[in-house]
Length: 262
Image 1 (cartoon, rainbow, N blue to C red):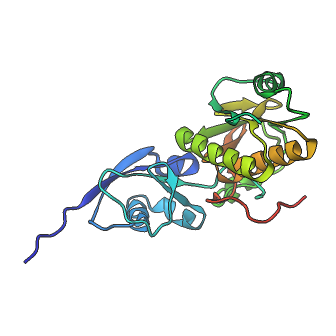
Image 2 (image 1 turned 90 degrees about the vertical axis):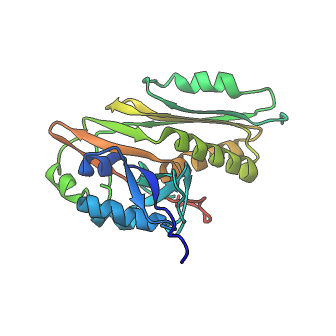
Image 3 (image 1 turned 120 degrees about the vertical axis):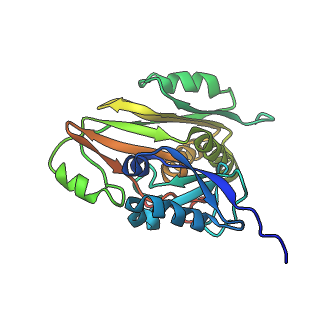
Protein backbone atom coordinates (compact mmCIF):
# COMPACT_ATOMS: atom_id res chain seq x y z
CA UNK A 1 0.00 0.00 0.00
CA UNK A 2 1.44 3.39 -0.98
CA UNK A 3 2.18 6.01 1.62
CA UNK A 4 -0.36 8.80 2.10
CA UNK A 5 0.91 12.18 1.01
CA UNK A 6 1.77 14.52 3.84
CA UNK A 7 -0.57 17.48 4.46
CA UNK A 8 0.65 20.96 3.58
CA UNK A 9 0.55 24.21 5.52
CA UNK A 10 -0.10 27.56 3.84
CA UNK A 11 -0.03 31.07 5.24
CA UNK A 12 -3.24 33.01 4.60
CA UNK A 13 -3.29 36.81 4.76
CA UNK A 14 -6.47 38.88 5.15
CA UNK A 15 -6.94 42.55 4.35
CA UNK A 16 -9.35 45.44 4.82
CA UNK A 17 -12.92 44.30 5.53
CA UNK A 18 -11.91 40.63 5.73
CA UNK A 19 -9.36 41.41 8.42
CA UNK A 20 -11.93 43.38 10.40
CA UNK A 21 -14.63 40.72 10.08
CA UNK A 22 -12.35 37.84 11.09
CA UNK A 23 -10.31 39.95 13.54
CA UNK A 24 -7.12 38.33 12.32
CA UNK A 25 -4.44 39.51 9.91
CA UNK A 26 -2.87 36.18 8.99
CA UNK A 27 -3.04 32.54 9.96
CA UNK A 28 -1.51 29.18 9.09
CA UNK A 29 -3.92 26.58 7.70
CA UNK A 30 -3.20 22.88 7.26
CA UNK A 31 -4.63 21.37 4.08
CA UNK A 32 -4.50 17.95 2.43
CA UNK A 33 -1.88 17.39 -0.25
CA UNK A 34 -3.15 18.57 -3.63
CA UNK A 35 -5.45 21.20 -2.10
CA UNK A 36 -6.38 24.15 -4.30
CA UNK A 37 -6.86 27.80 -3.50
CA UNK A 38 -10.61 27.17 -3.44
CA UNK A 39 -10.02 24.48 -0.82
CA UNK A 40 -8.02 26.95 1.25
CA UNK A 41 -10.88 29.43 1.01
CA UNK A 42 -13.34 26.76 2.17
CA UNK A 43 -11.09 25.93 5.13
CA UNK A 44 -10.89 29.61 5.99
CA UNK A 45 -14.67 30.01 5.88
CA UNK A 46 -15.08 26.92 8.07
CA UNK A 47 -13.05 28.78 10.67
CA UNK A 48 -14.55 32.23 10.01
CA UNK A 49 -18.07 31.77 8.55
CA UNK A 50 -18.57 35.55 8.51
CA UNK A 51 -16.31 35.67 5.44
CA UNK A 52 -18.44 33.28 3.38
CA UNK A 53 -20.85 35.79 1.82
CA UNK A 54 -17.95 37.69 0.26
CA UNK A 55 -16.75 34.84 -1.96
CA UNK A 56 -18.09 36.19 -5.26
CA UNK A 57 -16.05 39.38 -4.94
CA UNK A 58 -12.81 37.84 -3.65
CA UNK A 59 -9.76 37.33 -5.83
CA UNK A 60 -6.64 35.38 -4.87
CA UNK A 61 -2.89 35.93 -5.01
CA UNK A 62 -0.42 33.07 -4.52
CA UNK A 63 3.08 34.16 -3.54
CA UNK A 64 2.49 37.71 -4.75
CA UNK A 65 0.77 37.04 -8.09
CA UNK A 66 -2.90 36.69 -9.00
CA UNK A 67 -3.93 33.06 -9.39
CA UNK A 68 -7.19 31.25 -10.24
CA UNK A 69 -9.07 29.39 -7.53
CA UNK A 70 -8.22 26.07 -9.20
CA UNK A 71 -4.47 26.56 -8.57
CA UNK A 72 -2.90 23.68 -6.60
CA UNK A 73 -1.03 24.87 -3.53
CA UNK A 74 2.38 23.78 -2.24
CA UNK A 75 3.61 23.56 1.31
CA UNK A 76 4.76 27.00 2.53
CA UNK A 77 2.78 29.04 -0.01
CA UNK A 78 1.52 32.49 0.97
CA UNK A 79 -2.08 33.03 -0.08
CA UNK A 80 -3.55 36.54 -0.06
CA UNK A 81 -7.32 36.87 -0.10
CA UNK A 82 -7.99 40.01 -2.18
CA UNK A 83 -11.26 41.77 -1.27
CA UNK A 84 -12.63 44.54 -3.52
CA UNK A 85 -9.85 47.03 -4.23
CA UNK A 86 -9.99 50.80 -3.94
CA UNK A 87 -11.18 51.52 -7.49
CA UNK A 88 -14.83 52.11 -8.28
CA UNK A 89 -15.56 52.17 -11.99
CA UNK A 90 -13.63 49.72 -14.03
CA UNK A 91 -12.32 50.68 -16.31
CA UNK A 92 13.72 57.51 -26.42
CA UNK A 93 16.22 56.37 -23.84
CA UNK A 94 17.51 52.81 -23.71
CA UNK A 95 15.49 52.14 -20.55
CA UNK A 96 12.10 53.38 -19.34
CA UNK A 97 11.99 56.17 -16.73
CA UNK A 98 9.68 55.06 -13.95
CA UNK A 99 8.83 56.07 -10.39
CA UNK A 100 6.54 53.54 -8.68
CA UNK A 101 5.99 54.07 -4.97
CA UNK A 102 3.72 53.41 -2.01
CA UNK A 103 4.16 56.26 0.48
CA UNK A 104 3.10 56.50 4.11
CA UNK A 105 4.04 60.20 4.35
CA UNK A 106 1.54 62.77 3.08
CA UNK A 107 2.18 64.80 -0.07
CA UNK A 108 0.51 67.78 -1.73
CA UNK A 109 0.13 69.14 -5.24
CA UNK A 110 3.82 69.97 -5.44
CA UNK A 111 4.50 66.27 -5.95
CA UNK A 112 3.58 66.74 -9.62
CA UNK A 113 6.46 69.18 -10.00
CA UNK A 114 8.75 66.87 -8.04
CA UNK A 115 7.93 63.89 -10.26
CA UNK A 116 8.11 65.91 -13.47
CA UNK A 117 11.58 67.18 -12.61
CA UNK A 118 12.74 63.59 -12.13
CA UNK A 119 11.12 62.23 -15.31
CA UNK A 120 11.07 64.89 -18.02
CA UNK A 121 13.73 65.01 -20.74
CA UNK A 122 14.26 67.33 -23.69
CA UNK A 123 12.61 64.70 -25.92
CA UNK A 124 9.28 65.18 -24.10
CA UNK A 125 6.84 67.64 -25.64
CA UNK A 126 4.01 66.87 -23.22
CA UNK A 127 3.66 66.27 -19.47
CA UNK A 128 0.31 65.22 -18.00
CA UNK A 129 -0.20 65.11 -14.22
CA UNK A 130 -3.13 63.73 -12.25
CA UNK A 131 -3.99 63.96 -8.54
CA UNK A 132 -6.64 61.83 -6.86
CA UNK A 133 -7.92 63.82 -3.87
CA UNK A 134 -10.15 62.86 -0.92
CA UNK A 135 -13.65 64.22 -1.50
CA UNK A 136 -16.53 64.74 0.93
CA UNK A 137 -19.15 62.77 -1.00
CA UNK A 138 -19.21 58.98 -0.44
CA UNK A 139 -18.53 56.42 -3.16
CA UNK A 140 -19.97 53.00 -3.93
CA UNK A 141 -19.65 50.57 -1.01
CA UNK A 142 -17.82 47.31 -1.53
CA UNK A 143 -19.93 44.13 -1.60
CA UNK A 144 -20.94 43.35 1.97
CA UNK A 145 -20.69 46.98 3.11
CA UNK A 146 -24.15 48.09 2.00
CA UNK A 147 -25.71 48.05 5.48
CA UNK A 148 -22.87 50.09 6.95
CA UNK A 149 -23.09 52.55 4.05
CA UNK A 150 -26.82 52.92 4.67
CA UNK A 151 -26.09 53.78 8.31
CA UNK A 152 -24.00 56.74 7.12
CA UNK A 153 -26.37 57.84 4.35
CA UNK A 154 -26.55 61.63 4.03
CA UNK A 155 -23.29 62.24 5.87
CA UNK A 156 -20.09 63.66 4.44
CA UNK A 157 -16.80 61.78 4.47
CA UNK A 158 -14.24 62.98 7.04
CA UNK A 159 -11.28 61.29 5.36
CA UNK A 160 -9.99 58.09 3.81
CA UNK A 161 -7.73 55.31 4.98
CA UNK A 162 -5.78 53.04 2.62
CA UNK A 163 -4.40 49.58 3.26
CA UNK A 164 -1.98 47.97 0.81
CA UNK A 165 -0.28 44.70 0.01
CA UNK A 166 2.73 46.79 -0.96
CA UNK A 167 5.03 44.29 -2.73
CA UNK A 168 2.22 43.01 -4.93
CA UNK A 169 0.83 46.51 -5.50
CA UNK A 170 4.24 47.65 -6.77
CA UNK A 171 4.48 44.56 -9.00
CA UNK A 172 1.06 45.33 -10.50
CA UNK A 173 2.12 48.95 -11.05
CA UNK A 174 5.18 47.68 -12.92
CA UNK A 175 2.96 45.51 -15.14
CA UNK A 176 0.78 48.54 -15.86
CA UNK A 177 3.87 50.60 -16.74
CA UNK A 178 4.95 47.86 -19.16
CA UNK A 179 1.49 47.93 -20.77
CA UNK A 180 1.62 51.72 -21.09
CA UNK A 181 4.97 51.53 -22.86
CA UNK A 182 3.67 48.83 -25.22
CA UNK A 183 0.33 50.55 -25.96
CA UNK A 184 1.26 54.24 -26.05
CA UNK A 185 5.06 54.31 -26.35
CA UNK A 186 5.31 56.25 -23.08
CA UNK A 187 8.44 55.52 -21.04
CA UNK A 188 8.38 58.40 -18.57
CA UNK A 189 5.81 57.42 -15.94
CA UNK A 190 5.28 57.95 -12.21
CA UNK A 191 2.64 56.31 -10.03
CA UNK A 192 2.74 57.24 -6.34
CA UNK A 193 0.01 56.03 -3.94
CA UNK A 194 -0.58 56.76 -0.28
CA UNK A 195 -1.19 54.23 2.45
CA UNK A 196 -2.66 55.07 5.84
CA UNK A 197 -5.01 57.95 6.64
CA UNK A 198 -5.61 60.74 4.10
CA UNK A 199 -7.60 63.76 5.37
CA UNK A 200 -10.30 65.47 3.37
CA UNK A 201 -8.92 67.50 0.45
CA UNK A 202 -5.47 65.85 0.43
CA UNK A 203 -4.07 63.74 -2.45
CA UNK A 204 -3.95 59.98 -2.20
CA UNK A 205 -2.50 59.19 -5.64
CA UNK A 206 -0.32 61.06 -8.11
CA UNK A 207 0.31 60.16 -11.75
CA UNK A 208 2.74 61.85 -14.15
CA UNK A 209 3.23 60.80 -17.78
CA UNK A 210 5.91 62.35 -20.01
CA UNK A 211 5.78 61.76 -23.76
CA UNK A 212 6.75 63.28 -27.08
CA UNK A 213 3.12 64.09 -27.96
CA UNK A 214 0.16 65.15 -25.81
CA UNK A 215 -2.20 62.39 -26.98
CA UNK A 216 0.07 59.64 -25.71
CA UNK A 217 0.67 61.45 -22.42
CA UNK A 218 -3.07 61.87 -21.77
CA UNK A 219 -3.82 58.26 -22.68
CA UNK A 220 -0.98 56.98 -20.48
CA UNK A 221 -2.10 58.95 -17.43
CA UNK A 222 -5.71 57.84 -17.84
CA UNK A 223 -4.73 54.19 -18.33
CA UNK A 224 -2.44 54.32 -15.29
CA UNK A 225 -5.07 55.56 -12.84
CA UNK A 226 -7.87 53.37 -14.23
CA UNK A 227 -5.77 50.19 -14.07
CA UNK A 228 -4.25 50.92 -10.65
CA UNK A 229 -7.72 51.42 -9.18
CA UNK A 230 -9.04 48.25 -10.80
CA UNK A 231 -6.09 45.87 -10.27
CA UNK A 232 -3.65 46.90 -7.54
CA UNK A 233 -4.26 45.38 -4.08
CA UNK A 234 -4.97 48.73 -2.43
CA UNK A 235 -8.06 48.98 -0.24
CA UNK A 236 -9.89 52.20 0.59
CA UNK A 237 -12.27 52.94 3.46
CA UNK A 238 -14.26 56.14 3.91
CA UNK A 239 -14.03 57.45 7.47
CA UNK A 240 -16.99 58.93 9.32
CA UNK A 241 -17.21 60.25 12.86
CA UNK A 242 -18.56 56.94 14.17
CA UNK A 243 -17.35 54.30 11.72
CA UNK A 244 -16.06 53.55 8.25
CA UNK A 245 -17.20 52.01 4.97
CA UNK A 246 -14.92 49.99 2.67
CA UNK A 247 -15.23 51.07 -0.96
CA UNK A 248 -14.60 49.24 -4.22
CA UNK A 249 -15.25 46.36 -6.58
CA UNK A 250 -13.77 42.89 -7.11
CA UNK A 251 -10.21 43.19 -8.37
CA UNK A 252 -9.64 42.73 -12.08
CA UNK A 253 -6.78 40.26 -12.57
CA UNK A 254 -5.66 41.30 -16.06
CA UNK A 255 -5.56 44.36 -18.32
CA UNK A 256 -8.76 45.80 -19.72
CA UNK A 257 -9.24 44.74 -23.32
CA UNK A 258 -11.91 47.23 -24.36
CA UNK A 259 -11.70 51.01 -24.13
CA UNK A 260 -13.01 52.44 -20.83
CA UNK A 261 -16.14 54.62 -20.87
CA UNK A 262 -15.52 58.32 -21.46
